[in-house]
Image (cartoon, rainbow, N blue to C red):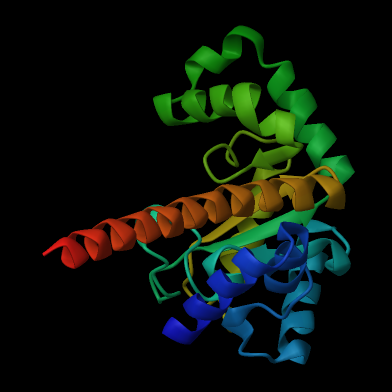
Length: 213
């Protein structure tokens, strides 16, 4: 697993971020499918039928795609049985439907739980700007939420997502998906470069002190 981490970090630092986004997330057979392209296509086809979205507009992101967590706070922890399955759904139709619903909630938003209200606020302040709808905390209130919840439960019975926690995130289009994923990788890249620069400075400082002894 360290090989995946080392190769990912090397690619992220040495290549354009958009290229890393393509090779590690958008245009690859996700890690969880063990390079089995046919299994991946069949899995996407099953989900496609259940949520009425073309299978080409469905892909995996996060650790289930890359093989390691891209959250710096998780120290690039490897994908495990406890890891979530993050799925990107590219659909202008469902994005617009969810956006219209959230925009027109009005005072009814105050009747929801604190978790749902916080998620609604997050969409107003952040997610909508990026052209994305994070359905995991608000799926129960969305117009298509019931059908998608059924679809998620059925996909939990299919290899390789059996009993996995599946989260669906809607993107307005592929440009929004790429921009969002690339922005996350850019932040990660900057963190890595800052750490590298710090380590170089520490090395130089220690080397200078050793030479003065």
